[in-house]
Image (cartoon, rainbow, N blue to C red; front, side, top):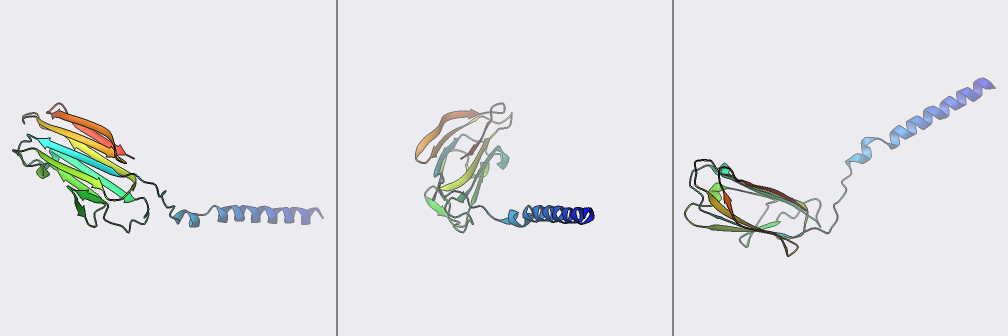
Length: 167
């Protein structure tokens, strides 16, 4: 009787371990959890004035990245407008110093066309020590409300502007 009880207990124990391993397996971890449908609309207005024409595109590095909140599979590819023109099939936008020509102030307005889920915007402005300073202005709006309004920031070899915005 004792051997039957021990044998039954071992069988139940092994089955319980097996059941836990199967239920905790990786098969369910491949499921995509859709993001919430409420996202954020963004609008960035960036002005650069007085940048020296050095051909060094690395002085400015701007990146805008997003996924439509209502479409977690990202089937909608028109997420951004640049100066009012929709950017077809662009979920990621990049700008560098060559996008801001020397000799005149240049303003670029980037805005989302739809609410975005967890958008990330990185703005990096730098300068070389021997180059003349240039100025930038950055206005960031989230859901129609101004969040950042940095005016006439001087970018020198010692002063950079490096901001990452996540929503």
